[in-house]
Amino acid sequence: MGSEEDMHDANDVQSVEDDFYTGETGMGSEDDDYNFGDNYSDDSEDVTSHRLQQNYTILSEADIRQHQDENINRVSTVLSIPRYAACILLRHYNWSISRVHDEWFADEEHVRKAVGLLERTVELSNARELTCGICFENYPRGRMSSASCGHPFCGACWRGYISTSISDGPGCLMLRCPDPSCGAAVGRNMIDVLTTGEDKEKYSRYLLRSYVEDNRKIKWCPAPGCEFAVEFVIGSGSYDVCCSCSYSFCWNCAEEAHRPVDCATVAKWILKNSAESENMNWILANSKPCPKCKRPIEKNQGCMHITCTPPCKFEFCWLCLGPWSEHGERTGGFYACNRYESAKQEGAYDESERRREMAKNSLERYTHYYERWATNQSSRQKALADLHSMQTEKLEKLSDTQSQPESQLKFIIEAWLQIVECRRVLKWTYAYGFYLPEHEHAKRQFFEYLQGEAESGLERLHQCAEKELQVYLDAEGPMTDFNDFRTKLAGLTSVTKNYFENLVRALETGLKDVGTSNNQATCSKSSSSKSLGSKSKSGKIKAVAGSSSGSGAPSRSLDDGNLWSCDRCTYANPRSTTTCQMCEHHR
Image 1 (spheres, rainbow, N blue to C red):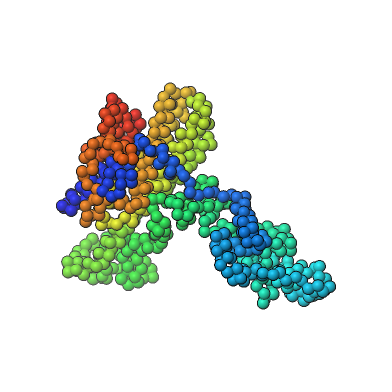
Image 2 (cartoon, rainbow, N blue to C red):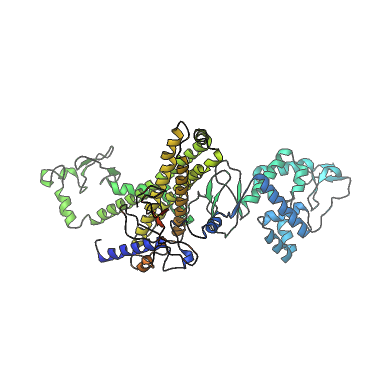
């Protein structure tokens, strides 16, 4: 370390690394610890069950229609009004039953006026012939229709009016009487009677979409071509949902699922990836403007004699940007510039050089994170393709080769599903790292350590599910060690899943147990010196960081005398063994 402060930061990170694996921190109770690598706790089944509880429901088109009809019937029954009137009310109040009830019982007259529901229906005149208010033709009373206001219009004019409104879009759901002075609502009862089958279908479709798009609890799945909707329990925790079409997305912002990164950070990251700011940074860092026409010029090789492109054709020195006619042997020749060096010593180029250096550093930092973000995205897409291949082709082949029913090979699919999910999480950790404040050195070092451990664990699982599985796929007959492979892959899947779940939880809390560069970590070193494998009040076994192993990861062991924990995958092995039964890493 270059300074006492850096040494202090390093101690903080080491302290928190120890505490991170023990689960003992200076902040929060023992029940709140991260418990990385802890698969052997007494209440692990309860934790897993809690994590798997869904806080959303996937709705098909039939489900949406059923929900919509139930809401309409409920409001119609409670308020003692026709179904079409209940539908108009719910549509006006964004399909919120509670809001309809509150507003109706608070001021029924105001609500009726706002939505166009008259308290008393006005019947058509009893005259034998009536005049249409649109075409002004006289028709027999039986061929005339009206809304609840009693204004008469002929069937042809009604159909034209309604058809035009439906063609204009969802605004037809708020249709009013054609009479300019009247605000009476035109409900679905009239639509069904007066329109053609095509218009009825369009109106019905608009009404169905309104139930989703105007409802604050329901959203369409954003996957292309998907017709499912998601009903979410607001305030119930994670916004990540997985549609029946297998697309995972964030219910809050409708972007792809992005835990552990919050929606605001995702929006900034996506905007940065698509904005022109990085182009300008590249131009600033890698080019200089022509002194005459100001067009940016990139120099990637050659001497300092630059000639601008036509029609400018200005010749100048790349270093000092002065006219080349004033340069020659006396100024340093073609590969140097004495004028630039002397001016630089006098500080003439300090500001421009500083700006160029800042732009270059910023660009390099962004490129570092973006390339790794994009690489994990590509890896995830490949993993999805491999998963599909496994489900459609290879699983059946493996079943025949190893004489195993497909129902007993689900552990392979589970492993690939976990790989896909971990690639997604790992991808977004790079966006998280990009926006992690530079001055929080301890937190950044700890984050990079956890990220590196996650990558290592995922690579082990990926290699096992891809490379090692291929041996059994290529075999000509059943292999005696296939059950050992099953145990290994299932164990790696469980360990990796547990680690990534806790990594997400830690990053979502902002690594709160790590101090900033100016403050000591909240966790003290003393917590990591406690007896290895001690149990917390909640019964969770805690593994404590000890001395570093050859791989650079903390070596951990359990104090019950019968087990030791692998420093690579945290699997608990019998004390008598010297090689991890899960990942074959030497003790």
